[in-house]
Image (cartoon, rainbow, N blue to C red; front, side):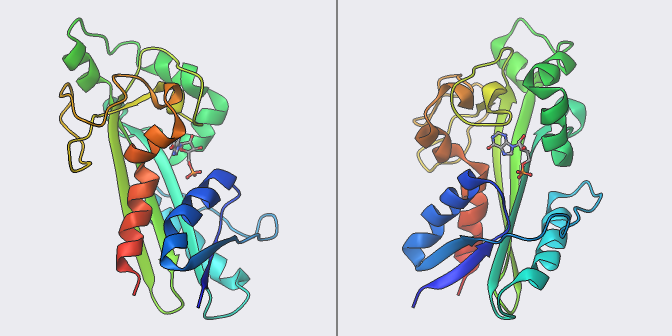
Length: 216
Ligand code: IMP
């Protein structure tokens, strides 16, 4: 029997990606639509705390008390800025955007290409939290990389025009900065590669996979 997972999101890309992962395991993803202002995002510097708070609030809007519901939150964390913009990623993107973010990093320059990447190290983080009707499951995903020096428009969204992922090894694990691996964007930002290439590195995919491993 197909089970439904209600997903609290307004992002069609996230819905599609979740369906891709949950579908083969017999789950159908449905968008959970709630009245405007019904979910209040707490002030916190932890993606996990924010996701769990939203999940708790979403339970009140489910069609039945034993229904399953999921929330996914993500952000870009820049090492040299102590993790900024992190939980403020959406707001920072809406205000100063990718161009503004690059301006904040202009002091981080180096002649050495490997050292340059290290100075500009950053990572995407994602937290997926699911209430399965009885207990709460949490999946975490990370995509380490660095910030490019210029913008590569094309595919993706958010900070993809300036985010370059670390290469992956044969097992799909990130390699140290400067090491070449079989899965690579060849130094190109996510904005400059096809969406299925980005998918192999995706923090969101990793978080969803970790969640799925815990489902009974
Ligand atoms: P959300 O709250 O999970 O929708 O994401 C917060 C913000 O983080 C987004 O608005 C983007 O600016 C940024 N972000 C998260 N994941 C990605 C990604 O995969 N690509 C580009 N930007 C991302």
